[in-house]
Length: 181
Image (cartoon, rainbow, N blue to C red; front, side):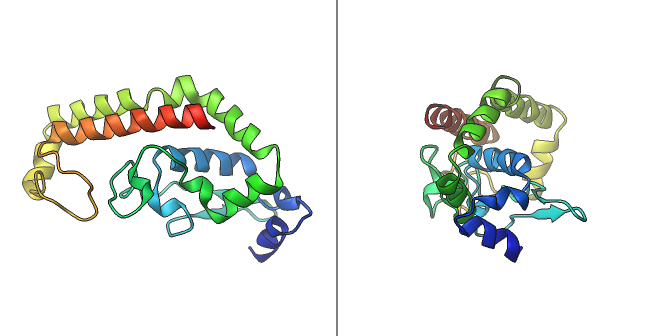
C-alpha cells in the first residue's frame, strides 16, 4: 500500500504499476452514480490484491447513505462531484491526463445497457418486492415509514414515495454526470 501511495503522490506517474485502473474506474463510476458518502475516503473502501498482481477495487459495499439518503453533506444532492473529490481519484485526475478520458469512455460503454437501465431496475424490483409481500413484511418488522430517521433528508410516508424519491434522485444524478463527465 505504501509503495502504491508513494507512486501516486510522486511526479513519476507510475501509479498504474500498482493500481488496476479498470477495476478502479468501475468502482468509481458506481460510487459516483450513487454519490456514496462512504466512498470518499471515509470508510467501506475495499481493495484486494492477488499475489504478484495490482490493487483491485471492490467489492462494492455500504450504500446505506448513498443515493441522496443523507442529510449532513453535499452527497445529499444529485448535482456535483463527490467521490471525484476524494484523495486518490483527485490525484489520479491531476497527474494523469488520460484518466478522465478513460472514465468517460467507460461511462459511454456502459450507459445504454447498464446506467440508463438503473431506474427501470429499481422500478421492477420495487414492484416485485411489493407483489411478493417482502416490502410489507419489512415495514411490519421495522415500522419506519413516515418517521424521521437519521440521516434521511426526506420523509415520504409511503413505500411508493420512497421508491419515487430514489428514482427521481437517480434520474437527476445520471443526467448531471452525463453532462459533466
